[in-house]
Length: 274
Image (cartoon, rainbow, N blue to C red; front, side, top):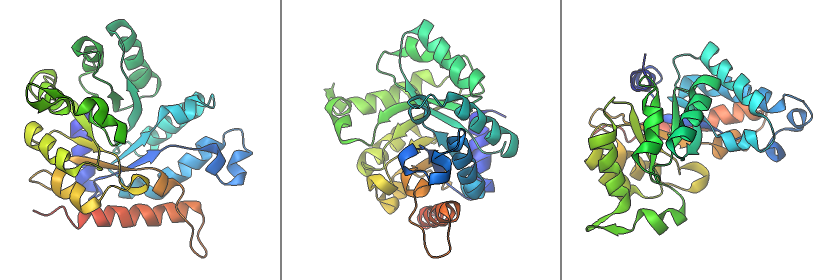
């Protein structure tokens, strides 16, 4: 099953557009994980188990692992998802962007080493820097378009022939690069008007939408701007708000994470109907 079909099945099976981001900050992990050699793996495994029935995808951010020399634990986490939740798409958030020969190695890293169903990439260097990922026709290629950070406007909103640059990226991906039907776009929840513009350009193409939770994106505006006619079409990511959820009486971190994930999933679902 290719990435797009797997994602579509997960939207339906879990009645969810929630993507759970795995951004393990060692300083924020419970003390017992900070002291364990494989503490990152143990922590993420418990988060995965607590939220798997509520998520349409999992998204480990590679920088949080690489900075600590924990790539082997990331391999274990990816293998755990594939073995125990094979129906949930695994997205490697790497935001790679380099020339073709190097991009081919990054594609091998994402798809061979980590076994990801999809990877995030940066289109700034153009088509030949993205094409190596497209050679893996069963895997997803999720391309940065209108990102959730404030500085994204420095380049993404530049006027090019009367349109902002991010709209040119959306059109380029939808009309030229998506020949295998494997592409998706990153569009931030912090810019719902731009999210609606991208949806109008790309039709039913999936959108990875960061920016709710800790970044403050509005769920109602996000869903109304980015949903497809079927009420699907998005992977709305939440990372820190779930991973480090404040605990209520009697809860441990995994129970708190599940509660926030459930509340987020249900809040998203309030606005999915047309």
